[in-house]
Length: 372
Ligand SMILES: NC(=O)c1ccc[n+]([C@@H]2O[C@H](COP(=O)([O-])OP(=O)(O)OC[C@H]3O[C@@H](n4cnc5c(N)ncnc54)[C@H](O)[C@@H]3O)[C@@H](O)[C@H]2O)c1
Ligand SMILES: [Zn+2]
Image (cartoon, rainbow, N blue to C red; front, top):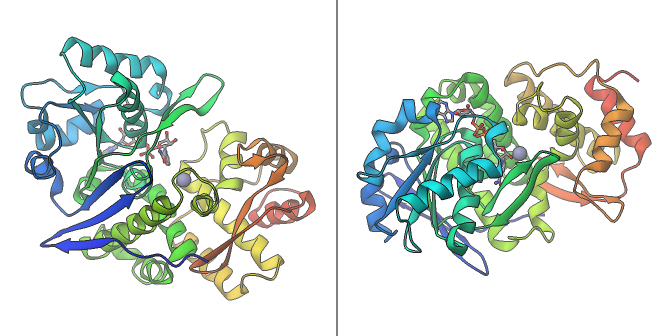
């Protein structure tokens, strides 16, 4: 069971959460309107003066004016939108822009965008001159509560997702929930499933707030969204601070991801947004926990209700159970043949089990709506 110790300071309207790992520290700042105040924030936190912006055309179109002062006269480095550009070729373009502009060890890379820009720019920062300072300004909900925190950076290879990467903690993560207003609705909803995940693994109060205030969450009411993001960041920061390299505890962040990743893989990453697949994955993990007698049925039902409230998930009724099980087995979390499956033992607490059988998994997948 996780009992987290918040490392939290609230000043004026900025909340600060610290990530402390054996090798480096990182500061997360969360506040409405932060994006318009970045140069001052970076100065205040003594982040180097020569700052390079990495972003994508879509994000730049919406928020370029707000953030451009960060890099002074330097042009932003824009990489086309989309997962298919999260490659070494794009990283190479970032190196090239840095070298041409005379970047040195004291330079700073500021990534403004979703998880794709953050992972890719983060990898460029981790490797350029053996590592330069990294700042994340995440602009999707998923990036704000998940990918910008924890120091995992990397790119895809033609033969698989996220196969090339490193750990490189950002010095600063500046989270402004107001930038989410321009996000497509489906992208925003997809990020919400990760917020639900934090509720299930570590915070009953977060779970309850999402359940009772779903409308306000959809309307992006700052009174609800800001605290939900803060609580999510606090949980991730705490887990990462105790287990940066995924020795054990960090695995709880993979709640819902075993089946979720398999559903994404068998549909070739085209049918589901990541969070939607995790929605199914959490339902599967809850069903498994109820079958094992470790989670009360009332909690499973509450989770199923919340997921339903968040909207319709893409159909799974045409997917093949043997294919999904094969994908679960291929998942990189299968270490030495044992399948580590994170299950919740109730809303707010989790456990890991490593002896899930195919027969159990089959029943769970039938429960999700896959044909027997
Ligand atoms: N490093 C980690 O720990 C970690 C964790 C989870 C996911 N990830 C990675 O994150 C990536 C997914 O990130 P994502 O879901 O943010 O997708 P994304 O970065 O592709 O962004 C989704 C879309 O939203 C657009 N967008 C971003 N911000 C916007 C805004 N404010 N307004 C309008 N449009 C905006 C983007 O241009 C893009 O088209 C995957 O590559 C995944 O592997 C990494
Ligand atoms: Zn995820």
